[in-house]
Length: 138
Length: 138
Length: 138
Image (tube, rainbow over all chains, first blue to last red; front, side):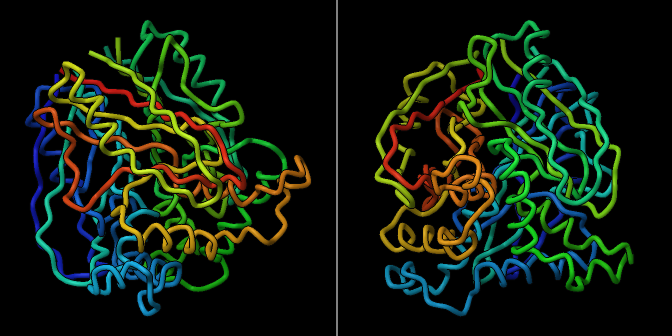
């Protein structure tokens, strides 16, 4: 059995983090799938999906470490192609990844106590985003 | 068909790497699933799941490169929230990721010859860990 | 229902990027699976699978940022084990990851407009590679 749903939201630009956990849990609860997997996927080349403890400190720390690893203020070849200044956004997306698959056991995701599934905006401007939530199982 | 199992172990703290490959292969062999996928997921926000060649050199190199990328000796905002000094652990987990999905073909994972599935401890102290192994297929 | 296929190609060495998107879409179209997931997995410990906008600028930028993050010109302990000089290749693979799972809806992957699924060679020489494409669904 396969069930697909979409989560929609707006972002404010680079480093904006959205906690998707409760909405994904709702989608699972509203499905008839009790055991299997949920795949969360971000369509878009300047986005990230991962897990983190969603608390105010890390909401600052995670964007800051991404800025240190892949700076936004140096020139990338990508910017010569499109002149939109978001080469760093694409590189951060390729490094962090845009998908996660989480086991479902007895209708719940097997997350840790302090572990949330988050979307992080890497683009350099506000965007309308949609996330695909695909549940598969029995 | 869906089958779930758990692998349990203790870790010694930051950089401790466990090779999970044989235990996952055993779980697959004991299931009645011959073709499909296995999802390995670490519940916890200071952990990592990935693949690497599990040999003594890389067991030193991988923690060292993580220390270079996300140093443990600088202050993160996370530490102002909880004062447990493991902001770097959370950031490493968000970057490396906590899940992997591997195809199963004829009851075997399609791993490369030198490729092992590993857990890496990012927390700054010893922990009791459990990993969820979810097999789905036919 | 589960369907497995293989994509084969040669690479020219470190930083060679292959766009796998069209070949994966063909495999999905030739299957009888309309809704579910596709898992793309690279067997090998010196490889990467991720998404990026496949355009000439980023084909230079992505290898360059990997060189900055995990330099090829410093010595790793791995090289003391095997003396093949590719410690950096293994570390890049462990960081970027070797798998991605993408939802399939109405026989199409839910990719963004500018988002391609790519293989990146991290090894320090040309290699023959094969990628496993596993489709599961209904």
